[in-house]
View 1 (spheres, rainbow, N blue to C red):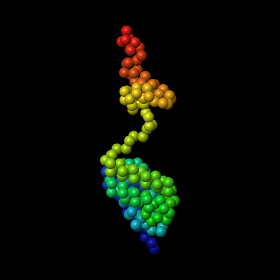
View 2: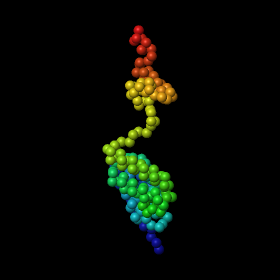
View 3: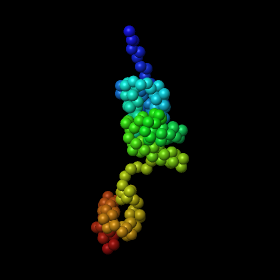
View 4: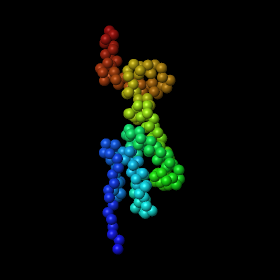
Length: 185
């Protein structure tokens, strides 16, 4: 007669390390990238040739995101993750990233690139990622630079957008065209 032994709950990382992730039906939780790396290493070491073990590993492999990497400021954890993702790009690697069916090579390569970028940012002392947005956002350009770009930019479509932005700023500040005419009289 077999007796079912309840699986103990496993939690990795510290609560301040990043977003908490609770993997459904696995009793595994981790906090941020340091917890993810620790969880992968522990779970691979404890894995067995059983469908429940494989399901647990599949759920774990799919749970990391680029946001986890961008929010990690622990250089040692980033270097461990870099090694994990680097080894995981190859088929049948025993690094803990599986045999390629959990994450495709392109996904793993994307995580690897983001990890290396975060390592480079931290080594240069940059602790904030630039906000995503258009390359040339007229709303973010100071007035003097805006006027200079209107005079010197080659693309007339861009110049029209810059002029529109300048007109909107002048209307908001109360310095419309009519106000200038009254002052000059």
